[in-house]
Length: 152
Image 1 (cartoon, rainbow, N blue to C red):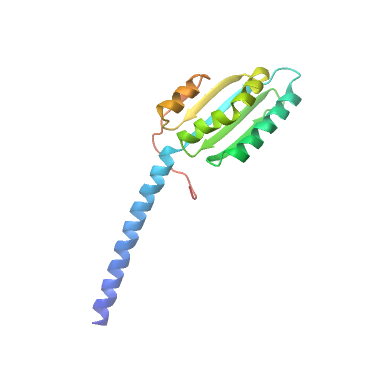
Image 2 (cartoon, rainbow, N blue to C red):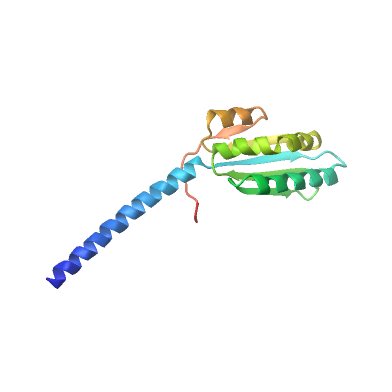
């Protein structure tokens, strides 16, 4: 009787773990397919690097303070400090729209001295978010497959 009870407990545990792993993986996949990432390239006008850094500092503060669904916001400069690369990672399309509304006025000031020379958007956006990014020249790439390590 003890052996039968033990075997039943092991079978139940196995079933539970299989169910949990299957559904946890599905939940993780659903979250991952809503995420949006983009990479932008800006060309900084000669003699405007200090102004660029000032405006970018304000944008970073506004994003960090007002956009909880912005998962990552990283800015890189080349060694000549005339090219900027921005990597942005959003929880979903709604976070993209929130970002555009939040930084809109500052972004216009930034683009006056550092226009966008390339913007590549990765993920399955809503039509509203895609239309908003089309207006600034984005190229779009739909999610196909892959994974992200760690917690989402």
